Length: 429
Ligand code: ATP
Ligand code: MN
Image 1 (cartoon, rainbow, N blue to C red):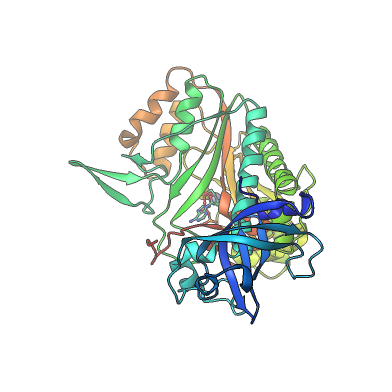
Image 2: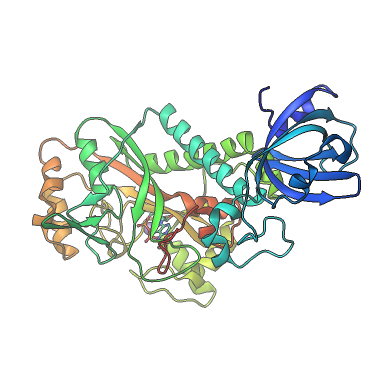
């Protein structure tokens, strides 16, 4: 007989013969009965075994928790058991025995510390509320991808082992590449732009980005998922519209495909209204100043300043027109006042979700920007070359997928939304 998923049992006729497969989450032995709570990826069901019908009942009643079993039986939809549906078992098979004790309890009322959970992530993810986070992440990226496809973006894959640092800087992981020194890429920026010169016009990539940042915070990983776009014949305004709609479509996809998982997490989320407010860097400085936090021109908005700004604008908003000193060399200077740039960050309250900008497309300005930023242009010849033979004006952004997930689900730590996080001290599992 074919396997039924626990979540589908309610829609089958009462009294039907069924087979379910999953983990023995709880086993309770009474004098004449044994109850097993079986869990699969879709839910839990109680199976009831009458001892009289099973000569080998001791094998089941002594079975260790989290063993994998197969249960056959008759469906009872009128059950008063806590799982609502019950299976009156007619047979069972043990498919694989679990060792005990478990390094991490699945149904312990007190949650284990985060380190223990991450060290035993496969068990941690057996808890429905933990698995739900990753189903939602899947729906979220699906919605973003779907929107970008509809806007005629081509999904691309660019190298993660590279010879030059995207933004210079020291936040790089070196790798030995035969007789050469190479790095893990911080961002697909340079490759996205080269592809704009190829005439593909609109590209996006979902892939890992590596940052050798020493700090250990609740919103930084050393490897995260970057969602990047680059679009030709557009500017920062066009790219911002694409961003807010991508985020909105991602959230709509979560609501459509993952409503059960949101319920499991006890969360209600709303579809954000677009367009998101646009606030300039200078306005942000003024708001900070009005709250007693002085940000000198050209310096980054501090966490403290962003708290006040976030309180004022709520949820999603853009900070636009950043000063040149704070943005990478490839950022387009503002045509009226080159102290500023055509750049933006997408924020959710005090947290940064995305950085983006119109990019420089003139190779001479680009070379000037390299010098201003103290970078060696010769390391970037492969990149500059793509600007010399007809590079269209273009713009784009890079969004941290785990950051977006974190704010959407109000996760206390970005690692909660990362299956196997990489941080200052963790590379296993
Ligand atoms: P932050 O200032 O928040 O550390 P950043 O300005 O250094 O970020 P960008 O280079 O602008 O980061 O990267 C684009 C996006 O990628 C960020 O807006 C953020 O969502 C995400 N991101 C950047 N660094 C990390 C990281 N270490 N861990 C997780 N996500 C990150
Ligand atoms: Mn940024």
